[in-house]
Amino acid sequence: MRTINKEKIIANCGHVVVLKGGDSAEREVSLLSGEAVFQELLKQGVNASVLDVGDSVVVDLESLKPDLVLIMLHGQGGEDGTIQGLLEVLKIPYTGSGVLASALAMDKVKSKLIWQRLGLNAADFVMLNAATDWQAVIDKLEVAVVKPVNGGSSLGIAIVQDAASLQKHFEMASQFDSEVMAEKCVVGKEFTVGVIGDLLLPVIEMRTSREFYDFDAKYADEDVEIVCPAQLSEKEQIELNELVRSAYSSLGCTGLARVDVMQDQGGTFYLLELNTIPGMTDHSFIPIAAKQAGIDFGDLLLTVLELEQAAN
Image (cartoon, rainbow, N blue to C red; front, side):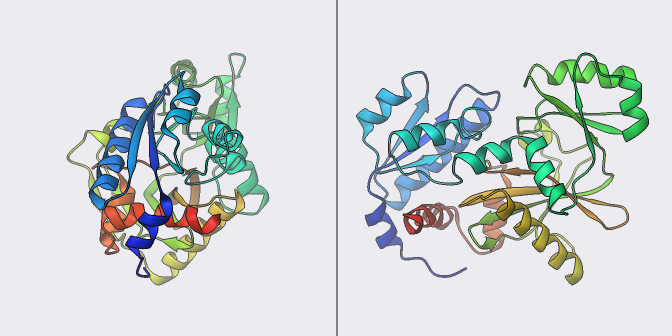
């Protein structure tokens, strides 16, 4: 990674307000991410404030008068283009992807349809509703992953192999989102790749004894094995890099993001989803991968600020 001019970045960013919290199902993770980012910005000498986003967000922002907003809101209301649209109306610059890219990435169906249209590997899926023929879905997908269409942190996700379980977990996933999908389960290795503009961070492979890398594995399980950099052949690395770059650019993403990928037992990579506001807790992948690349947390955040400065 190229050397950054810390003094110049800090001088140019002015007053930075970190948005955290919100009212999505991922609020608790957002509070942790936002506080970690806020404390590190202060440590770096940035003129920073932090705001727990609520109903008075417009009044709060007008009072704080930010020159730049660093968004650390995970899930609906923060990652789906909503807060981005508000900041556009208020004419306040912000970090990360814009309204459309955020909305597309948050919607697992829309993003997958774009990727499939472009010939990028993404697992087959079926939309679910109360009138779904549950057995027909199992016959089609065999083993399915039930997911809220708009959501993150693996909340509401389950792997099912029969019609009764599919219906049960559809109802459970519906508590997190009004739209629920069943995706063909890809059996194999799970990877995640951080993207910062045109830079790809070292690939992480997640290994867990759980059925899949769920919420508890991400934020609570100390026995999860994080392999970074992942053990890939040169050919696999090139193929994965191309897939990740294509996924990122096809949705129009900018700034920091993270792409989750599965590799089946035959070696084929499949896109799972793209996160435009990845977590920044002590369990989060982006800081882990950045550290492997020789980028400390402070430099990582300053690079995020610099990318927004360069875009304006």
